[in-house]
Amino acid sequence: MQDYVEQIDINQYLPLIIDVGINVLLAALILIVGLYIANKMSSIINKIGESYDKLDNTLFRFLGSVAKYIILAFVAIAVLNRFGVQTASIVALLGAAGLAVGLALQGTLSNLAAGVMLLLFRPYKVGDFISAADRFGNVQEIDLFTTILKTFDNQHIIVPNNQIWGAQIVNHSFHDIRGVDMHFGVAYKENTDEVRKVIDAVLAAHPHILKDPVPFVEVETLNDSSVDFLVRPFCHGEHYFDILYSIPEQIKKALDEAGIEIPFPHRKLIIEKEQ
Image 1 (cartoon, one colour):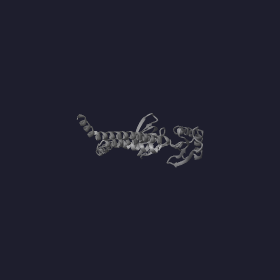
Image 2: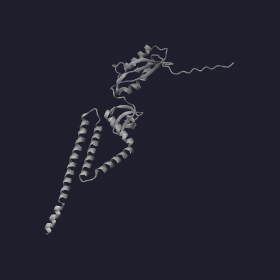
Image 3: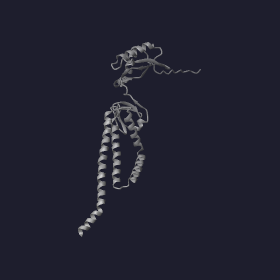
Image 4: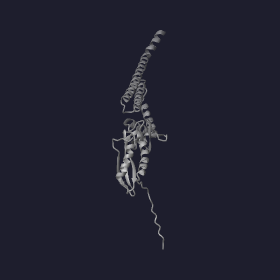
């Protein structure tokens, strides 16, 4: 009689046990497959980033992580759904929480969006000299939120990406050959052909100035008290600043040796004596 009662009790709960067991197995299967797909998707995106030299791998590592966690979020919802948990309210709660976090982190998300655009379009790369956000320096690091610059006086400047992406960016290292613009004024009495010869001789003697393209030396402006020359020699990018800060002094000395006057402002004072 006791065995019969126990048999009845087991038969009564057997469907429930089977149902729970099936849900556990399905949940485990969903979890395993979801983890595999998430890791595989992240790996595929990272490999795509490694195969494209022109695109920064940091962006693809970020996109891989985003894809992985999005898939894991759906996997978690599917697992909870197998156990009868109402996931609609959870999704709504996560959506509201995401909206609140997004509003609280508007600046951070703006930097993130700008960082994604910078890493995707790559207007500059590590090692370039750039002018951006009213700053000039050598790019040391680019991440999703900031760009780190090193100035000539060894300042470490961290610039938010949204300040860079939303303004003009000048990449001084984009082209291998650079033109170096300089301006020099001489007195009106001087012969412009002689001045050009002196300047050409200085440029020809400099070891870092290229012969091709030929340096540009021409009269640019007839100023109030001077004839102004535009001088533009060409060089490789790594010699730009050497030429910019050495040639003016050399041209000044060469003009002095040639007896060519470099004008400077004069003020004439006339004193009238009353009768």
